[in-house]
Length: 244
Image (cartoon, helix red, strand yellow):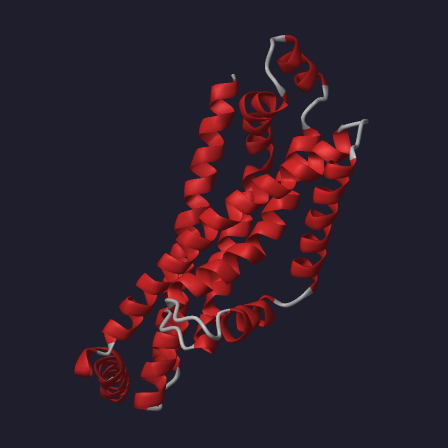
C-alpha cells in the first residue's frame, strides 16, 4: 500500500511539474489562447467569404444547368466558375495559402490574418459552391415556376423560394465544411501566423516537452468542433420542427 501511494505521489508530481512548466511558468498558457483567438478570427472571416463565393458560384452553375436558353454571357461565367472549382479543388489548400501569401501579396503589406482568411475563404468557397448547387438542384423545379407565376423575377425566386429550401437540405454538409475549415486553419503557421497549433509548437520549442501543449491544443480544437456540431444539430432540429 505504501509503495502504491508512493508511485501515485511520484506520478502526480510529474504531472503537476509538467503543467507548471508548460502552462503556468512565464504565462505560457497565453500562447494557446492568443492562438485560439487568431484561429477563430481566420475561421470567421473565411466562412463569410466562403459563403459569399459559394452562393455566387452555385447560382451561376445552377442557372446554367436549369436554363434551356444558355446565352454566350452565361456560358462565359459558367466556364469561369468551372475553372475556379477545378483549380481550387484540385490543388492542396497549403499550396494555395503559400501562393497567395508569397506570390500574390508578396509586394503588398497586408495583415496576415486577412491573407489567411482570403486563402481559406477562396478554398472553402469552392466546396460551399458545390454544396449549395446540389441543394438548389434538389429543390423541385416546380418551385421556380411557382415563383415566376407569382410575378417574381429569377433572382427574387432564387432568393425567396429556392435558397431557403436548399439551405435546409444542405445544412449537415455545410456544417461539416465549416468544421473542416476550422481544422484546416492549423496550417496557417506556415506563413508565420500565431494560430492555435503554432502556439502549442512555441511552448514545445521552449520546454522540449511536446505532449502537454499539443494535447491542450487538440482538446481546444475538439471543444470547438463539438460545440459547432451541437449548434448545427440544434439548428437542424429547429428547421425540421418549423416544417411540421
